[in-house]
Amino acid sequence: MTLDPQKIQTLKEVIKESLHKIEKDIGDLKESAKPVAPDNAIGRLSRMEAIGQKSVKDASLRRAEMRRQKLLETLKRIDKEDYGVCVECDEPIEWARLKSLPESVICVSCLKEAQGES
Image (cartoon, rainbow, N blue to C red; front, side, top):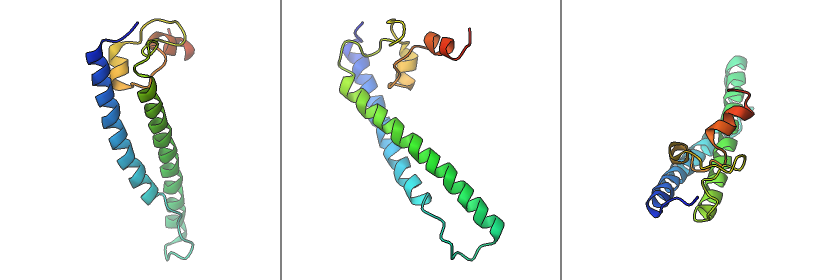
């Protein structure tokens, strides 16, 4: 199954917009995830909270960087004939899913099955 050129163009625009947002988010996260200096004059609990927040931001940064990589890879393969086809069942991935998550390689049915849902 090949998506029509208009849908491919729409997905490319979605990906580029997502990449732009992710790049901004990554910059913000890198800035806010800097190490907590030990010489900060904050109380013990506040320092522990700051360290906990840093861990959350580090995890968010890793997720954002992973999604950026997936989107970049998707841009490379979006014009190929197998783009938009589920790797599990070889059926087309739903348009709504591709539009919201263009990096998807599995359809909703197979995803639910893999998660044990029916």
